[in-house]
Image (tube, helix red, strand yellow):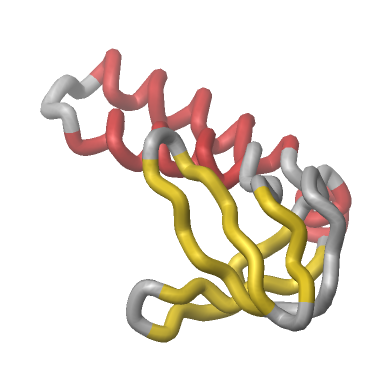
Amino acid sequence: MVDWIVSLGAWNWFILAVLLFLLEVLAPGVFMLWLGLSALIVGIFTLDKPIVDGTGAVRIDDTIWRVSGPDCPAGSRVRVAGADGANLRVEAV
């Protein structure tokens, strides 16, 4: 079962977002809303500017984050592996 969930890729984040939104409707309190929005954003996390020589940028909503990782073209799907202050370390998916 776990292998099947992992094989869904970005879809598992969209499914989690929907489940959290449903929980928010059933038990309002605005807490699950923010978790659902973050799951939705993570599901569509792609590079805004290419990673060249180890640095690039990604746009999340109205904020641009500096990222470091292996060279990737713009539009590539990446996964956040860690954070160093305001710099996100990413790896290609």
